[in-house]
Image (cartoon, one colour):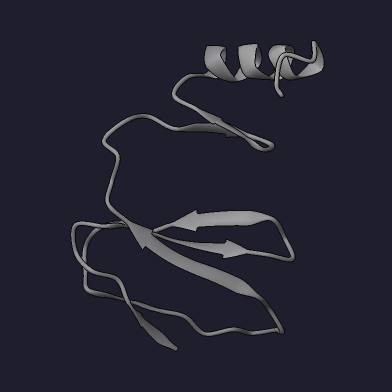
Length: 80
């Protein structure tokens, strides 16, 4: 399968069954994929945000320290 991957965009696959994210280099205009087994992928692309990204579970922040604080806030019931 060949999917459009416009140059200058952040492009990714998310494997739904394995909970894995794969991001691609910005070096072409398409992504080619060949499945060797039954799979479900989410394909996406977006404008790059130009910031570092750190993810842990449902939390996405700019630094590891912010992730730790977000988890602490969640555990302490500060999210509503």
